[in-house]
Length: 319
Image (cartoon, rainbow, N blue to C red):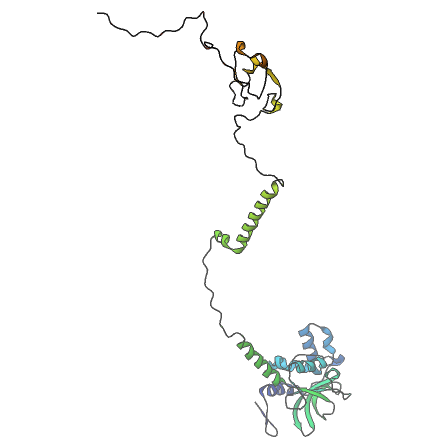
C-alpha cells in the first residue's frame, strides 16, 4: 500500500494497478497500428481484428491481467461496454480518486453509451486529474493532465471487490444447515422393487385390465345357467321323436302298457289286461288317468294248465 501525495492512502488494488501501468509509460505503437497489447487481446479472445484496433482499453485489460486484478478491473476492448459493466457492478462514481478508471465523451455527453476513451487516474489536483492513458496523440502511452468537463464517470475497482466479497458472504449464509453424510447402502435384492410405488401401480393396472376383460366378455343381459338334474316327469325334447306331457296323440289301450316302461319320465298309465279293458276305453289319451276298474277275483292266479307250487315238508326221521 502506497501513500499518495497529500497524505492520501491508496487501496491495494489501485496501488498494484498503478505500479504496473507506470512501467509502460512511453510505449509507442508499431506500424499498421500494431501493439503488443492488441496482439495479446486478439490471442485471448481468438479474434485477429483486435491486433491493430484502438488499444486504450486493451492496455488496461493487459495490466489487470498481469497483476491478477481482472475480476475487479474487467477485460474489455469496447469502452461503452466497460463503463456499463462498472454500472452493473454498482461501482460507478462521479468523483475521481487514484486508481479509478476515467471514461470520456469528447462531445461532452454524460451517458455511458457515448464513451470514446478510457484512462487511469494517477492523482487529483484541484479540478485537474492526472492520468495515464494509452493510444493518445495517435501512437503513445503517456501521462495526461485533463479537465473534468469531458468526463462521463469513474469506475472504481475497489467497489467491485467490496461487492464481490459481500455477495460471497451472503452465499455462505444461504445454506445454514450442513447436509447429513450419506451412508453406504448395502446391495439390495431384485425383489425389493416389488414393494415400490411403480410396481404397485403396475399390479393395480393389470388387475383392472383382467377384470374388465372378464366383464366385457359376457353378453349384456345374460347370466350363467346351471345344469340341474332332469325331474322324473320332465318332457322329452320333441326333436328326439318321443311324446311329451303336452303331446295329444292317442295310443291304443294295449300299447299304453308299453309306453314309458322302465323310464321315469313316462306319464301315469293304468295297465289293464286285454279282457278287462272297458268298452269305452278302447283308446287312452296319453297324459290322462282312466277311471279305475274292478279286477275280477282270481285274475292274478296262474293258468289252469300249470301245477301250483307246494311247500316242501320238513324231514322227519322214522322210528
